View 1 (cartoon, one colour):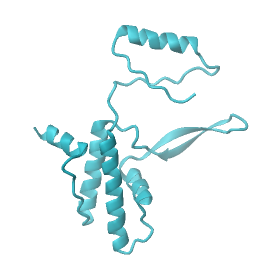
View 2 (tube, one colour):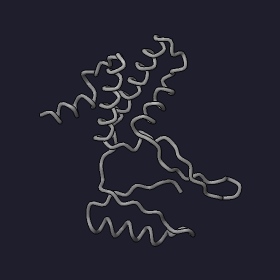
View 3 (cartoon, one colour):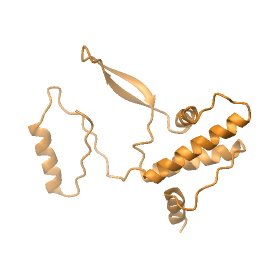
Amino acid sequence: MSNQHWRAQTREQLQQCFRFLAQSMPEKGWRIEWKPWRDVRSLSQNAFQHVIYEEISQYLISRGRKDCSPEWVKDMLKNKFLGWVDKEFVDIKTGEITIHQVLRSTKGLDIGEANHYIDQILAWSADIGCDIKIPTMCDYRHYKEAQAA
């Protein structure tokens, strides 16, 4: 079963969630994580992150770092600013569960976390001399302007 996310804003919705969990109890039980609902980063923020990875890659390659593909840059920046998390892996044949450290994904970042991650990257890129332009029409700029108001 894949991860499911429930948003409960009322007691009734929370009770529906509990009823579902009780009725579909897996053999090993549930792993439940509670946290306040926050909207995940926007597609615009994600697109801007990939523009940044591409621009930093081109900058580094132009300075002799031929190994610095956009995907490589993405992994190095995630390592530097987001870190690592534990992830469960299941052996397809035996069902044995092992835990390995993987780079934290940007997919689950909320809007504020995504903006903070982009802030860190932009500051770092400026420090190495790579000036990245922020598009006029992008959520990152919109959220920064709203924050400043």
